Length: 166
Image 1 (tube, rainbow, N blue to C red):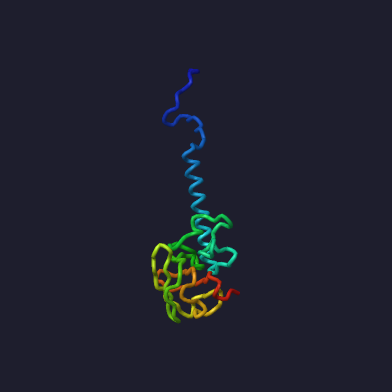
Image 2 (cartoon, rainbow, N blue to C red):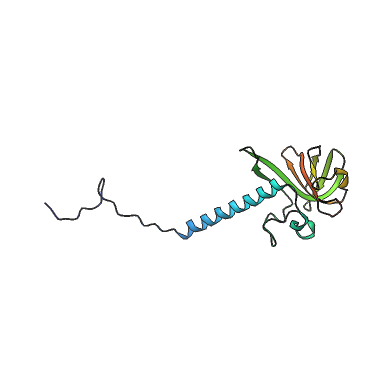
């Protein structure tokens, strides 16, 4: 019987792996965590629909996400995001912050500071200022509009102070 130490090989005992994270793996994990936090914030805003005056950005320009000091979403002018549909699935919604250029009983047009202009359909299901009527929103008002992908307005928040808030 030999007392020689056998080299690890196929089928033989293997050395224990060293379990350390590199700086790169740590940075990737941190980036993923930040991405999840941002997605969660957008989802919370989208599900809530109404943006209280206390959570408006400076000058009432759109939603202020992540509290005072905000984050990249705080000053967003327009964009698209995915939220839960409340039934175990997901849906895509759009948002725009800007000035009203036209408004009627059936549509509203908003123009963002960067010139982006969009027309949205308004119907009985559109929530305006947490329960007001669309006629409370006037041309020139600062608004944040959330819509579905067909540009049907889901919610309109008049942050100019002209529309009633409940």
